Length: 113
Length: 269
Image 1 (cartoon, chains in turn green, purple):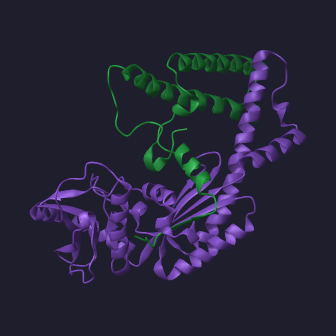
Image 2 (image 1 turned 45 degrees about the vertical axis):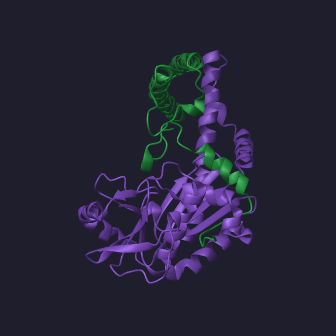
């Protein structure tokens, strides 16, 4: 059988690798069972917290760039963001989650992060 | 009698060419008004997805594409009897017609581009260091150092995105000239700069390919993948909440094809 549709590339392995990276991180159906339900829920909750944390961080950076934060405010924001990041690392460690697992595919809108 | 559905076509006429589908069964058209559902009889539902079954499905769709506009349906779509099929056709007739009209005389092509992300980043970092942007956050407390690192990363990411957009805009400008519709996936991973699909008029497909070859030849260090022609998998719009045409993405087939070079011609891959 020969198909007329073609896939032309000199680098098939590299494209396969990249496409695998972009596969949905979360499954389309929730595979909930007593063994993994805790981790599954943690993943979902931490993904949302991570999103909010990143938004806060980005907003802070914009304000730094705009020069609208005083030295003291930069100090305070730095402390808050650092503590938040450390706490997230701790929680990720507890549930055995990696950074790249904390993402959601929003269909046509693309990835959450 | 179970019917395996391959797609919906813009014709209610019988298919004159002999086409064999899954289980080697005859493929035929069941008309509904001025369109038709292309099916073959199947003895039992397909329980496992095999590469050969996917390729057989795709081979039927491709044969249909030579004579008709095709709405490809999801792989493994089995309908229980002719009455149920006609009922489904009645429910979705307007939607099918709208899509078939949009896709008339058009084909889908996929373009993926990998860029040298590491080199780009290195260049950005060197430029950043030269311009010493870190003056935005001064001081040496741990909090300030944290903020300075975050700010540098923020600026690098911003520059990385800007560069990506610049490259994508140039490429897309060339491809869009010959496309009726497009969907662009930007930086799906750090290396995958562009993952795009274009809906192209059949008459423009050679020009589209030439535009691709031009972009390829002018972007040293970038890696390109061109695929198609496909039926318009990525452009189907169904307002109703149907999963009939979803879930069979071009990528699914692409994965199979790229792993089976003998099926797509060794000179092409």
